[in-house]
Image 1 (cartoon, rainbow, N blue to C red):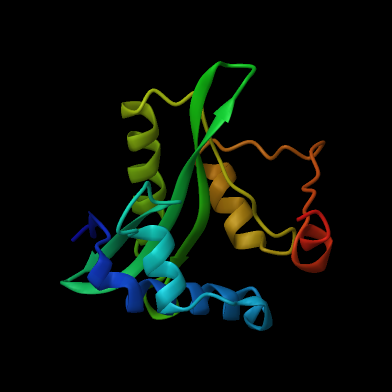
Image 2 (image 1 turned 120 degrees about the horizontal axis):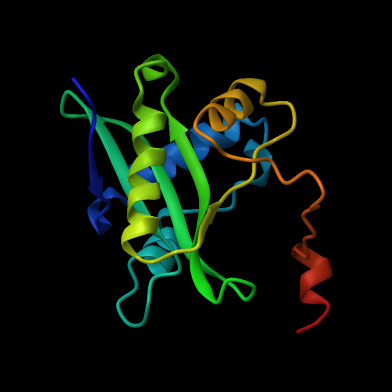
Length: 159
């Protein structure tokens, strides 16, 4: 049976944090997680203003199985919005059942429905299973582009 996918609600914040921590553990980046339930609630489900990102949750047989967290970006070259997938994670014991693919294709349909010109995400260079999966659905790796990041003290320097 295919997974069901639903929009996350504020009550899902503890589950979203569990997914984030699971992804960080898989990527060996647990030490970088600063997210808390309070921070997630404030940014994903603010009392006022727009959410910083959106989240969908996949359920298999009524149980949480995975999530995808995404936000809108913009392509000046296309003069269209885009959908940026920040995180995609499926619990390890549920992998291989098409849950990740269902989440990704759900977002692709959403991107089309919203008139997006592209959908993008990053993948760690050592994650061969994910790379193979993404390429199998038609994704093209943009090897000529490098990610640049200001964070922590480097970003704070420009307050």
